[in-house]
Image 1: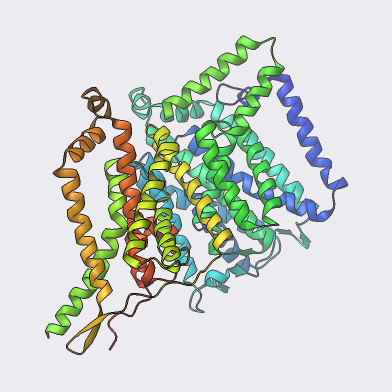
Image 2 (image 1 turned 60 degrees about the vertical axis):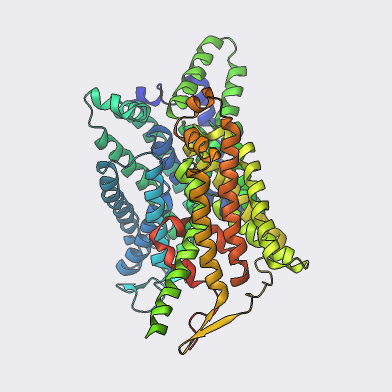
Amino acid sequence: MFKLLDGPQTLGRGRTFWSCFLAVLAAALIYPVFADSYDVGNFSYFLIWVFMALGLCLMWGYGGMLSFGQTFFFGISGYAYGVLAINMGGGTATIAALVLSVIIAMIAAGILGYFMIWGGISGIFFGIVTLSATLVLAFFLGQTAGPEWHIGTARLNGFNGMKGMDPLTIGDFYIEGSALYYVMVALIVIVYIALRMLVNSRIGNVIVATRENPQRAEMLGYDVRKYQLLTFVIGSGLAGLSGALYTSWGQFITPSSIGLPAAAMPIVWVAFSGRSDLTATLVGSFLLLFGFQTITVYSQQAALVLMGTLLLATVMLAPQGFVLGVGKLVVDRWTRRRRGDANSAVAETGRLQSDEA
Amino acid sequence: MSAELFSVFYQFADVFAFLILSAAGLAIVFGMMGVINMAHGEFIMCGAYVTVGLVKLGVPLALAQGLAAVTAGLIGVAVEYLIVRRLYKRPLDSLLATWGLSLIVTQSMLLIVGSSITGIGTPEGSFAIGGYTFSTYRLVLFACAVAVLIGLYITFMKTRFGVIARATMQNAAMAKALGARTGRIYAISFGIGAGLAGLCGALYAPTMTLIRWAQRLWWKVSSPSWSAAPMSCSAPRRPP
């Protein structure tokens, strides 16, 4: 089982990498002891979005499906959490609401994905269809301001957004502050490890083979559509997890977290980080969110200009992603003794990228 | 009766003109060249802003509109040369790059110009049929749209440039082997597309309050939800 942690589909293996991983994890775990609670809350907020980025990395980097629909499932799950948490009452039921809302997002992904993948939509049109779905949901929720738009006792409230749901709670204990932070870190570690195992397993190999050449994978006897659907459901489910966590974090969700500018964000994070590797996405998304938040405090427009510049520069200068490129450079320097080994790994990933383009 | 009929035609012409003018550039850039240009709306915005700026400087409206279209076209050539040219073989990346460009331009304009600037009024002039009054400028727009269609048809179907351009889009390597300067052809075609987008912005600049409407246009044009766009024209339609 743990053999799957290291494999051909993920960069970073061996004792050095996992030592670094444990060191970062340890630092993350003792961080709340030293930081004030405001910063801890902010860090939890950044971690919320990482799930979505990891899901997109799986779909786009490994599966070759560029989905613009991460915020679509984010929104479905976020609103579902709100509706369920309000209707089922607070308390421990919020945990059930979290699980159910992620499942709802995955069902939605299953339905949309079935029609797209069995309908033979691929390449750019995959992105266009998912983005259209996203915009439809954003516009639909935007016009639900009237009192007639309610599910149970939960008002949707149009552009003003839904509010009043409880945060995650166990019994009388609200999971917020440091507790929420630790839950996030635990979830990130679980999701990261699980995805690593997934992409290095047999299923992961088929997913990558499909990205490289769907026809070839089909000729080898795999029903690629099933694997694509699985990838899409898992990736979108992770976006759903982000959405439910976001709603419970702020007890608030609006259609603007679904619409066009929001939908662009996960793509920027993943493209900048390096879509072909989970670790790069994890690190890059976090850094980018951190930077974005820091600048947004001063000017949101400037932050978006910076996002655009990063996206443009990534595509023009480092199509594989900045974090991935820098990471490879560092690793190359570090392991000069095993240079031949490292170089072959780099060359391999480079080739996969060019094939995809 | 004839007044009602004309009113129906007038509305048809209005929507027709808007769709044709805003989509004509896209037809070349996306339809012919196969480049998904997410920054198409920004070229429209460019045309609109240049028109408003020039008119405020005292340039006559028609001249300002022509200059705006040319400006957008030149910027389009520059964008093709600097960005799009390197991405013809990576369509997804050209989508991302132009999206990045779109974010930069829109947000920079917001930072520099602000979220609203005072517009320029719609050119005066109206005529009455039956009990209804119609704005002449809307018919001018319709005429422009028809002229753009005819002009495009002639340019791409009847001229030597058009033949070479179509050959380049179909098989760039073969066209190059036959002596066509494919790089230049691509740049000019992209420039024409951008120029037409600029023309759309320039023609509609007097009829709208300039807000960030242009950036969403790409989706309005390319998706069935376009009907929301003409609604945002603030000029009076069919006043009683």
